[in-house]
Each structure stands twice: as structure tokens, then as C-alpha cells.
Image (cartoon, rainbow, N blue to C red; front, side, top):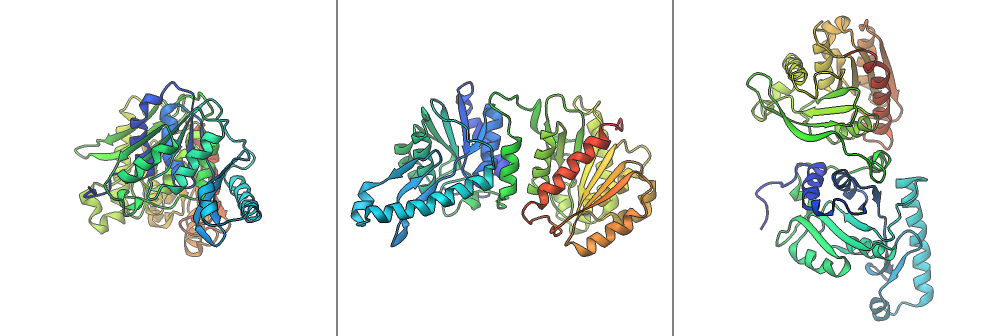
Amino acid sequence: MQPEGPCFADRDDAGRQLAHKLSHLRGRDVVVLGLPRGGVPVAGKVAESLHAPLDVIVVRKLGVPRRPELGMGALGEDGVRILNPDVIGAAAVGADEVAAVERTERDALRERVRALRGDRPPEGLAGRTAVVVDDGIATGSTARAACQVARARGADQVVLAVPVAAAEVAETLRQDCDEVVCVQRPNWLWSVGQWYDDFTQTTDDEVRALLAHAPASGGAAPALDRDVVACPDTLRLPGHLTVPAGAAGLVMFVHGSGSTRHSPRNRYVASVLHQAGLGTLLFDLLTAEEAARRANVFDIGLLAGRLTDVTAWVRGEPWGAAPPIGWFGASTGAAAALWAAADPDAGVGAIVSRGGRPDLAHARLPAVTAATLLVVGGLDIQVLALNRAAQRQLRCVNDLVVVPGATHLFEEPGTLAAAAHHAERWFLDHLLTSGG
């Protein structure tokens, strides 16, 4: 049976739903292994829930020389090699040919591991429970190889966990692991992406950030990590709140150009801020009905008023009453943040604009008092010019940072990570000393 609509908002949502199905593993010596790239964000949420370390499991298929789509084995880290003698025999592959394929794939494996993990050593699996996670399974060949590699690296138990897999495929995978856990098991699976509302491709930068920011073994979970509904006046605006233990500040995300709390770029920036000890609130500025009217997306006064109302609501919540508050805005959301910050009672300590349109708040810019950082891509020529002109109107502490090689959406390798770390530094330097 297929869904009438997507069952998962995005990979984070899928990870949270999958983590609920894996609650029986809490308390065990678990290592969560994400399959790059899309499986790693899902695995990250599972690792958070289980208070377990997060790592990647990189595998390379050994393809038959004349039929590379046909796997005759697989390679993994720690020198693991798994061969299928039946396939090798049936395809009449000689020992020299096997060795040649292995050399090529071993080099590719090393490069892939280095690109994702850098110098960080792999988590040891000997005697532990390995939870292999992907964002979904269509054929199962890569997941099968990953489970075999985890076993060969010494895992005492291997659990394969995915948000969605075809029922028949899930059953065949049981021969390679001790347990298969799925949130959804349709009778057939045309594509994994159809089960997601947002199936944006995961980048290497996001994988590296998730690994770098994952807690070590036995690390503490965030003090708060849950969906919330902001309720200013009669509105109900869905959001997601994450507050690390001992968080010294809270950053509210102001999405732009019709984006929502599910924005993969803003979620990535939020993960960087969490590692720095800052809480985040990603929320929808508009109701579903309001967002359906395109004009509302560009109504800066409406968006700014909504931000002001939600900030007041946050101050009335136990978790939002004390910490200084910052705003992170993108595109039109940055304009809304600066518009709202011109109010003397805004109560915001620092602002970061990523690819923002501060020119849309031009008349109010001189009244902004919160320390403001403008981050713009070096290849986003028109927006860069608008930001430079807007900066000249600011009277507050401010700076403009240009990220080389970045276009408007910061899609180029390394550019979003650079923007996120500029934001992290700005909030730590200015938000925490502002009294918010």
C-alpha cells in the first residue's frame, strides 16, 4: 500500500520516527552508522535519541569486470573484504581480475572515507551493537553490503534500520543482520523520495558537519529537542525547538521566500549552533492558508510583525524567559528580522543575515541597534551590491562577510559551512554579551 502523501517531512523527521522504533536499544553499547550521504541525517537523529556515537559506514561494491552492475563482493574499512564465490565462479572471474577490481575500489574507498571523515578515526565495532541506517531501501544491495561489513568488523549484533523499505526486500535483508527495523513497509517501492516531502540531496559538507558535531559515546542528549506550536494571539505556528543542556542563548530562524521550518540549509546552520552551545527555534512564519497566498511571502511588514509576536510568546515560555535571543534570517526573512529589530522593544541581541535582502527594510535600518552580520555569497553579485548599500545605512555594530565562490543559496561545496561558522562566531561574540 502506497501513501496518499509523504509520510516524512524530511530526513530529520524520518530519523525521529525511526528512533522511536529503536527505543528498545537504549542502554546498550550502540554505534549508529549512517550510509552516506542521505542516511547520515537520519542516523544523526537516531544517535541523538539513543545517546550513541554517530559514524559513517562506507562500502564499495566489487563489480564483475565485464558486468560492473553485478556484485561479486564488497569492501569496507579496516581491510574488510567480502567475496561471493558463487558469483565469481559463475562469471568465470580470475584471481588477477578480482585483485585488479579490488585495488581500484580500495583506493576509491580510502578517498571517500577521507572526504567524509577526514582524520577522525572510525568507531570501533568489536563486541558492540551496530545500527546501520539509510534514508530508505529500494533494492537493498548497498545496505546488505554495509551489514556484512559491520559484522566483519566485529559487531556483536547488527541492526538494519530505515524509515521505509519494500516489504519483500526487508525480509530478504534478514539473512545479513540480526534485526530489520522499518517505520513503513509498503508492498512495493517505486522510489524512496516519494515518501518524503523534502528529499533534498545531502551534501558532503552536511555529512562532515553531522559527524563533527555528534556527541561522543555516552554524550548527553539536548535538554529539549521537540516539536512545538508557537501560539501568539489566535495563531498556531508549528516549529521545532532544540536547546542543548546549559544553552547560553536562543537563536530564532526567520525563513525567507516561502521557506519553512523544514529548510535543509537552516537546519544545517542550526546544527552548527547546537555544537556551540546555542539553542534554536525553527518555526513557520505563516500558517498554511497564509503561505498559499504568494503576496504574503513578500509582505515584510507582516513577517516582521509575526516575528515580534513569536518572540514575545517565546519570552513567556519557561525555556525562553531567560536566555538572550538572536535572529538568523535568510532572504526576505533577513529583511523581516531587520524591520522588526528597528522596534526599540524588539528584545533581540544579535542578528545574522544569510543571503538576505536588507534593502527591503531600508527605511528602518538606521534604527536597528542589535549587532548585525551580513553574510553574502561572492557570486551573488546583485544581492551583494544591495547588502553593501544597506550596510552604509546601519548605525549599529555591524560587519559584512563575503563567502568566496558562493551563489545565493550557498549550494557550492564548503560555502554553507563557512556561512554557518561565521554565524556561530557572531552570536558567540555579540549575542552572549548583549543581555538580549
